[in-house]
Image (cartoon, rainbow, N blue to C red; front, side):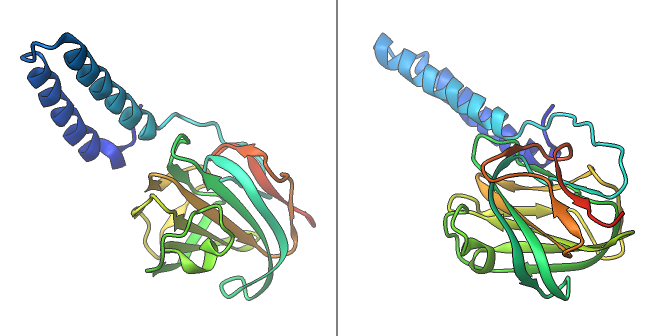
Length: 217
């Protein structure tokens, strides 16, 4: 299964690769012909792999926040100030390599009440300063247990953030809502009454891995 956000690119790449393969068939030099075909097929496989969109099973449990992205936990911080949260906040950062699934999912059910797009730089996504300096889309959700914010952050390679959300939308935990193309990062911010339940360098799965549990439920 492939994400709808990649249909155009998959189509364009497929046409280009097809033309390269057809052209290669007219080359008399067999090593060159084979090399072109191998590179073309490999490029198609990389494109299809990037835009894959597997189904996920979201935990059916109250008082949790799941990962909005596939990747590796690179930061856990419980002393960050966040304007949308309105005070001190927990923060978990997830680095998405080009090999990860890049479709993003809603981390907690609620109402979209804040969207803010920032133009910015394209610092490597694993750098902590990328949170404040890179191009990003900040998304705030008013859940049954308070405000939660997360950011889609473009990385060094990424140049395209896709977000299919509008203020006033009602969203459900685990739903697909967008993606970041070609390597990136997602930060999640919560009030301090949410307890992180993951650890540094842990590999997480969008829509499935629980990042936070409500401490006072």
